[in-house]
Amino acid sequence: MVLRKHALLTTLVIVFSALLYMLWHISRARAPNVSRTRYLPISFAIHERYVLPPTSECVSTKNQSLATVIPGNKSTYIFADEAAYYADYRRSFYALTMKKGGWDCFRHYEILANGCVPFFLGIDDIPPLTMHTFPKELVQQAMRLPGVPTEESVKTSLTSTAPYTAESFQIDFSVFNETAYCELRQQLLQHAREHLTTRALGQYVVEQIRSLRPSVSVYRPRVLLITEPSVEYQSGFLYIGLVEKLGNALSTYPRRKAIVHADRRNDTNAYGRGFGFQGLLPTTGLHTDHAEAEADHAYRAIMEYRLQNGAFDAIIVTNGGNEYCKVDSYQAVFDAEHRATSLRAIIRQYRARHPESVLMFVDGSDLGGCHTTDLPNVDAHFVRETANAVSGPLMLRT
Image (cartoon, rainbow, N blue to C red; front, top):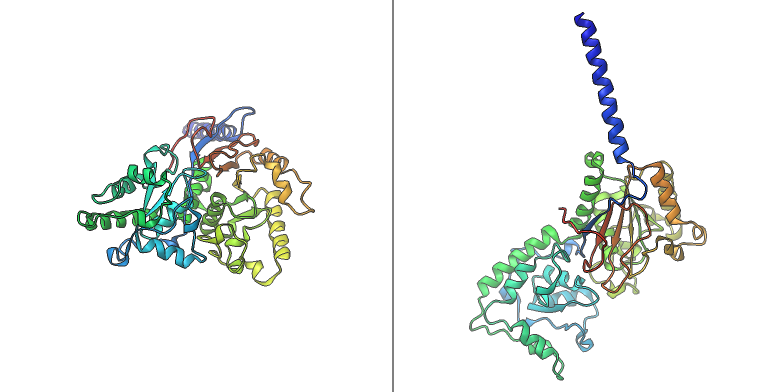
């Protein structure tokens, strides 16, 4: 009798466990026409090699109140090489910056990384979740130290007929608190090292994949990144961060972003002269010993094998250069062999076969760019410029 009860109990446990598993599996499948999209903020980043140590020398290295480059004043764009450009920030207390195509701008991160404080015009007006990792409060404190020109006075000077230059901005050192400045500078550099690097950006996106697919928490997720091969900042820094975090668990389509790898360090056609991203990553294995086209073809074959065999835990699609919100517009950057392939169809078919996989869209466009995607059932939609760019509530998940 006891054995019979034990057998019955065991059977019930097995049936109940099977039912729970079936319900869990059903819950993971995507119901048609039901949106489960998470809208999440995303921001630019800078590689950790550019970020000064927080305890690096402060005041003794500085000999000018404001950095040379004034946004919009082309006569101040005098630096032809990265080293001289960044050295100018390191010897400056402040550097002028502002909203351009969007609030988020790589210039902000270059300034911070080099131990300079961004004098950010309009910083109070940044939408709450735009530049969500940026240390706005620390920057505001440093901008408002005694002896520093006020934001209003700088704005007024910029609208005058005389061109605004670094000499127009002068700190009154008789009342300036250098100790407070250096303490804030140290906090800013520490924050940059922890939150503003490409590695931190890659980690942030990987964490979102794991929150959507908890089963990958015990290993590196395998990711397919669909992105234009050239570098515009959001997709470029995300690519660098994902390579740093995932290594060969990352595949890219149609090919790698070549300009960020060491074998392309001497190319002369990089966006923004390549400052802050060119040649940062090691040369990918096959590109060391093979011609570019041959190595690209081999990596594409690996990617297609993974796609056919359900290896990808997540697919990430980026827009770029304020374009590519319609995923099939990527066809124009493909070679002739793959130009007829519908990416939208490939993604749809993969998701039908593997409904547990995660689909993400990364909107790195400026305020005036495209912000939507024609991909169905996107799990996470990352937004750089958050004002009026999403159709659902933004959430902050760290």
